[in-house]
Length: 186
Image (cartoon, rainbow, N blue to C red):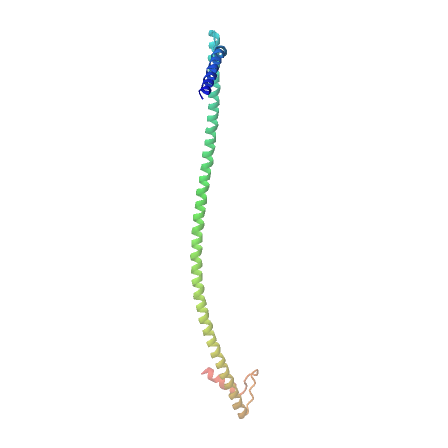
């Protein structure tokens, strides 16, 4: 067991020794690459510094102009949406007014319909009363017609007994005519 621990410690120390031997050249190479990158990004002359500042200003101006154009487009869209919203609100108000007018018309028509129905009921009652009255009058007329027929039959029988002929199409002549005209003159 001690032997295993010694092998482990010996392996660990040899790995550290190798890392210390290899680390300085890797470190130098990393420093060299980093320095080159920093020097490439950093201008060395005044002209390069001025050019870099001009490039940054131009980039900023382009970005600002893009933002201005985007803002202008958004304002135009908002204005169009407001116009469309106003038109829809007007349409909604007009539709509400039309709906209210239709409701009023429907209410008026319902009231008129109710009045007409009441009048129809009254007329129906009057008509049924008139029909009953007409039936009564008709039966009374039939009764009177029968009585008159009976009276005419009795009169004809009496006239036949007396010996006078009665013709309903013929005009009365003779004594009866003068008697009738004398009565009307008096």
